[in-house]
Image (cartoon, rainbow, N blue to C red; front, side, top):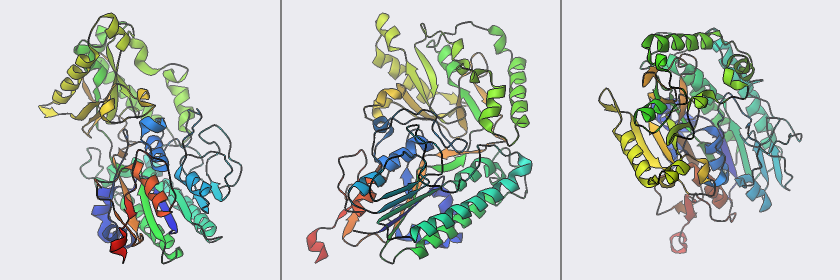
Length: 491
């Protein structure tokens, strides 16, 4: 059985590691020694479903946690009971000494041998964690304006230093079998600083003081990995995991509900022909841009409640759709501007009209695959949900899932242009991508890579960690990426 030091770094991206690798001695060493690098995320690649899959070894249709949550919101708003076991709970129940610091999800449960220290005040079941404290990265969710990005980055770095110091101090207290700490600053920096570092971004401001901020934080985290590596035993396994990567956020919105309306699948309640006026659409975009410009670094959720009309118990523009007559409508999987979305089919209406559900799905799928903007395909893939996952919570997904090209995000407005610029890109220019990271160093000689290995997914992390700890676990959606070497090879 090996001692495992597992470091979770939210937003660590495999492609950026390849680009920055020569400047990152510690991460570069792991990249050369690890049999893995890319870790396929969930659909969508958002923190809530993807980290839950890392923790449980289950896909989102099995664990059921699809709540939208990103760097602006660290506590889940939906507090329904969550019963699935995390890998650290399984390890502790098997008699291992386990320390877990700052997981995205936490619940108050006493297990002998488990020291769980969240930095949030509320767990996924709504309980308040009182056992211990861990330095919080931010005091409140916020969007920093451009004039305060330097101070924002300095705060992230200072708070991360505090988190690392607290983690190393706790690690030195006793001999842990499994030590897991999760750090989130890199994800924040990429959300807000992407356009300053990417000359290909249409809102790149040219030469600027923030051009190397993302690289600076990769260098910073490389040093952190080195500090944890030096603190571990020579025979310890060092693992780095990120449940999702990062990339440039969309620069256009594609209004799929308007496309569905034109295909005859969506029926509006009150057709408003004046909304098709290009000048009216442009005015709405200017008003939205003015709203984002007015935001200051205060609690974002409070400011939204003050300004957004649908925050008071309404549901956005869904009231413009006739639910009784609509066959299909677009569903946001990760909020507006995400490239991931879904389409919900009204099965009851199809049954009343004696229409084939499968034929309707296939017609919509074919239309999505053929959808082109300026003669270029705009949909990377589109599938029925059953083709993506299986699980007891599969019905929480819409009937059809799809991913747009990365420069497009989903939109749901009606009677306007099919494509409009995304006016929020100037403030939040980075978004989560489907390629996270898994690096594994110094794993035991008695283990080897599984023969049927096809590339790791987030579901494979939990069974792999438990295999390294010699902890038996029931069948999960993921598989252990390593297995015992045949005895004849050990002799």
